[in-house]
Image 1 (spheres, protein in one colour):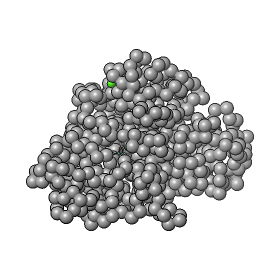
Image 2 (image 1 turned 30 degrees about the horizontal axis):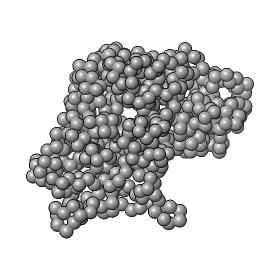
Image 3 (image 1 turned 90 degrees about the vertical axis):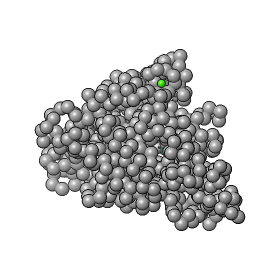
Image 4 (image 1 turned 180 degrees about the vertical axis):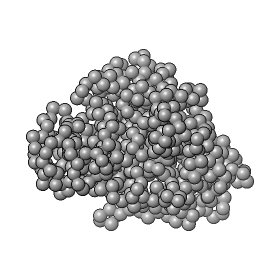
Length: 592
Ligand code: NOJ
Ligand code: CA
């Protein structure tokens, strides 16, 4: 099972380009400004990336030790999921201090060194910004729950129960549900009111109707920007506001008109606590604030990435704001993440949306993260998984815009959920076991080598989650020296994205649009010979006639193809094996 509508935010339907180099030249300032438009972003889940002190938990020194790896892969920027002090109920997404480093991950000096070493390699660093909620152990909330008259009381969302009197617990204020199950309201006995939490009980929602909350986060954003970070990924951003009328959510009905039930709980429409319009003003305000840091003193655009699970492309478009009042540079296009099947037509539609519906805005595709089963579990067939990942990574890197992927995707790491309830670390997996096993399966340690503990930890250490046995073959060391590996494929695609003008700057036109099995498209950039991409989304061999699609028969140079496949003898017959990919460049310009 994947994130479902109850666990919903994540699955609404189912669950330095060189800071040093060329300083002062106009070329440099253009790069500094536009670096993000075609960038390759790499998500690091620090807990599971590399453990330098062998205490079982990945750390900042571990990340610093692997920056050369990321450089060689071609990564422009890393997004670190939260490394701030946290009780770790939600593994860092419950923050108790926004301007410090959790000792489990290291010290502020370790962070500064990571920044220095990353800058040397022209890798930018983005932080995770969690504005919807804090930890219940944050000093703000400790104050807030101390008394009804505390100055921090209205930093959070408090409400009377439905009882006889205002202080009577009675019933919860309404039927709003937590993403992680159960009511979103938690009774506080001392002050005799309920507080609202969209996520865990230990993650009370901040009150964004309070201007002091706005100012607190502007200060936090300024703190990290002054440290030199290149931007932020804004967590659960669509959930900042709740419907002030406090009306119950509607219940989603199944095809027979009965309430839809998942994990024993009714599925709610989720329109009273998600994607309310207030978020746009907040993001425009934060963006204007951060833009002030894109100055000579702070070179380089500071980029806002959004965790934006939205129902459609029109809602995604709104997250960019307007040229006068910009919001996100790169709200994640999770429409592709949620296709969850090898369906060429669905991918074609999403690519056309990104090309046609977002105007001059830059799309950011993403297929994977630390909240969803890995690509193998959502798209794989158990037989052609590596080739399927070649297809998806081709879509990721050979389409317009920036690209984001998750640590381990590049070597084809597989989802490895716990097999026993007592081993589950993610509380939501404990709650819904065995229907839903939580997110441990996509958070297992990075597989660097075939050794015991995969080079994540020393062989005698005990990683916080077990290393899957498949590290014997699925590991960085083995794949780096294998020209046919998935790692080599990723690296090749990223190199093309950086060096080939049509690949990096082109716009996409779909070809052979009625083909149910093969996704073919052309990328054209002014002044560059076009690139043609054909990707077989099926387990059967396919042949594509590109000549019938207006691509003139003639010389084509192969840029990349599935290992072992032959070059096409003719553009009338581009033959593709099961989940095969062919990428070629025409040796001449075509009019379009
Ligand atoms: C989205 C994060 O990616 C997820 O891991 C977390 O549980 C929720 N937001 C709540 O912060
Ligand atoms: Ca450690």
